[in-house]
Length: 320
View (cartoon, rainbow, N blue to C red):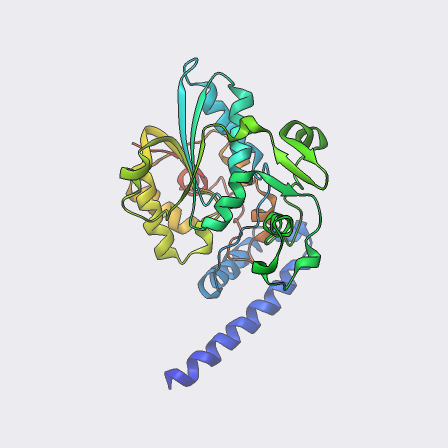
C-alpha cells in the first residue's frame, strides 16, 4: 500500500506546489507582506523545503551581499595597525566571493596582512577560481556541449557562467568597480594581481572533522549560500564542524542556510548573534529574498517582533 500511496502523495504535493507557486508569483508585493498572507508563505516554504530536490549550484555574483561585506570591513577596521587577519571561505566556487572579500578588506585596511583560505569540494572550479580570469561573453552558445572538448578559452567562458540563469556574474557591480577590480583583456577580465596575494586555494569538504587540524583557526570563517542546497542533517553537521575553525571571539558568517537549522545549532552551541547590520545583511542578497517562499533556498521576511528575532535572523555570530 505504501508503494502505491507514496508516488501519489508526491504527485499531489508537487502539483499543489506548482499551482500555489504560480499564484504567489502573481500576487502584488503589497499583498504578500500582509500579516494574514505571510503565514501562508511560511506554510508554502515549509512544504517546498521538505519536498524539493536539493542540488549544489555555482551561480553567484561579485559583491553579492554588500551589507555583509560592509560588516567585514568594519571588523577589519577594529584590528590593530599592521596586524594579520586570517579568513577561511568555504564553498568559494568561482572565486567571486573571495575576491569581493579581499577587495573590501584590502581597500578598507591596506595595512592589514590578509591570510585567506579559499575552500571548495571541486578541484576543477578551484583551478578556475585561482586564475581570476572571467569571460565577458554570453555562454548561451555552449549549452549542452561536451566540456572535455572545449578549448581553454571556451572553458573559461563556461566556468564564468556555469549556472547564471538570472543575471551575469558582474550584474551587481558598477562600471567604476569593474575598472578598479579588473584588468580588461579583450572579451575577458582578470582580477588585479594584488587581490590574489595571500589567498590559498584548497580542495576540501566543510564537514571534514580534521579541517581544524589542517587549516587552523581563523578570525573570520565564511560559509555562505551553499548549506541551503544540502539536506538539513548534513547542513547541521557542517555547522557544528565549522565553529571549531573560528578563533575565540572570532566571527562565523553563515547566510543562505535553512534558518531553522542555523537557529538550532546557534542555540545549542551558544553562538552570540552579531546584531550590527543584522536586518541589512538578512535582506542584503536580493536573490535570496526574492526566492521566498517558492524556492527552498529563499530567505523568509525579517520579523523584528519575534522573541527569537536576534538569533533567528542573525547571519553572523561571534564564537567562544
